Length: 462
Ligand code: BES
Ligand code: MN
Ligand code: MN
Image 1 (cartoon, protein in one colour):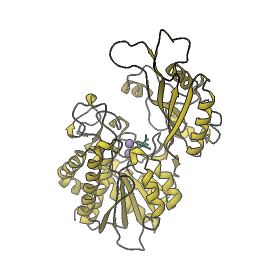
Image 2 (cartoon, rainbow, N blue to C red):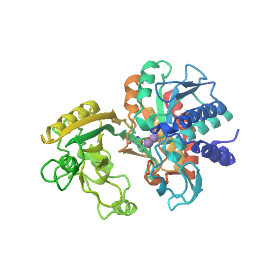
Image 3 (tube, helix red, strand yellow):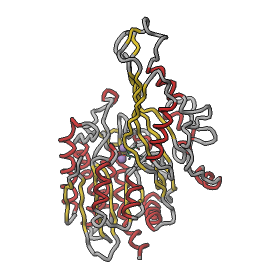
Image 4 (tube, rainbow, N blue to C red):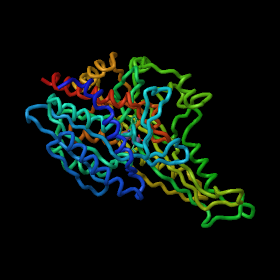
């Protein structure tokens, strides 16, 4: 059988069309209106694993959306790669900002993707990247070059915190046993410069509610005499950062690992242009914690951000009113060693303590998870680097990402194996935003690179 490069060339139209079919399914896990679509997507993933060559595929029911599990065991004495990915996607809103409908995939060219990119919700995060693994596996089966055992675990609740996957992993340690976990759900520096993600941030996500008077009031009759929950909430939120943009919650930084100057100098070697960064976002200047540069602020430092804030009158025209309640959703991105449950407690205690007596405050925790760091001297990292070096012509650079895949820390704890994050997306692919897309180059390059990871991982494991 021909090599992977020619296999990709011969089959690329089919690979693209199959992904397009998957992207037509609106598997939005956050919105119950799409629950039937999410379930249908899990079935499509199951069929794709069967067709690609798994010996055994099953839909594992959970208290939420199902997990698709598949495997090909060729020899119990050989290493096992566990591939994780997710078939659920983020909500597409705001719909009106899409240049083509989010669940009607189209190929368009961009400055960064002159050979075309597939525009659709989930194209990059994570259907496109997950499906690269299915097609790379198909190649290894077709060419009889699969060098080890493979297990697939594709879930449908990543975008809502992987709560049921946690239980599934805890209850299936033996079934999921592996020598390395392989995930493509992150990004790389550019199409000329591959990188391997060596760190993910943790997360604590909370919702806050500030209640003032027991009903909405006339803002003339009562204004100035009672607390306005929206004013108070804004003030409380503003106080969570000081003038240096440090977070003011007592104890928040207690377990934060300080990187050495050498490690920070190493990080600074990764190619990065602040001018291009600002230009891509139409910003006059960047903003963040004093004492750290942009690439540190968004990876090795913890943050606190309001994700949404609401209350009072937001309709047309003006309505003079003091609302009874104000709300906000707040996320804290955490770094390794910070315990997310402890941070949630510290936040709650502090937020309650800064509330004036004129209002009552409620804090409701949502989901969370631990951060992750992985060494660059493991067999898995080396195998990934060898694979990238071969397909891109240059070695990969280790990069710590600001994003979170909370289940990765749990994998290490429960399954005792390292995760290798071989991402092929770009920051400009607009994941979670309108007009999400995934480069055809990236998709095909991923399919080409993955079998080499298997090859080198098995070689280095001997
Ligand atoms: N694939 C992303 C995470 C990601 C993207 C990590 C790019 C690194 C680079 C994942 O689907 C995601 O969106 N995670 C959420 C957390 C989850 C608990 C909702 C996130 O980071 O906001
Ligand atoms: Mn993802
Ligand atoms: Mn995501």
